[in-house]
Length: 68
Image 1 (cartoon, rainbow, N blue to C red):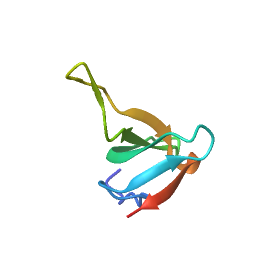
Image 2 (image 1 turned 90 degrees about the vertical axis):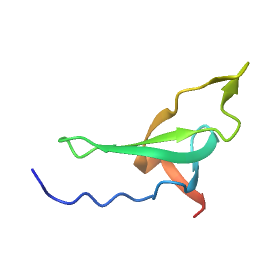
Image 3 (image 1 turned 135 degrees about the vertical axis):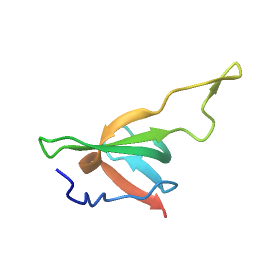
Image 4 (image 1 turned 180 degrees about the vertical axis):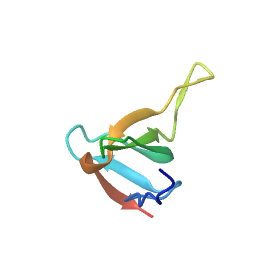
């Protein structure tokens, strides 16, 4: 507990899921005790009839940086 977590991406980075091709902006991150880091990625046009869409949670290892 209390140790610093080094995430691969920063909030605001544009990332792409290497498997699905989904692109979006990093809005949040979480580190689990098991060592799996996940990133909350939100599509830039994340609206559904004016209602915001929740970010997708993607394993950090599946993402690549598009634009920092």
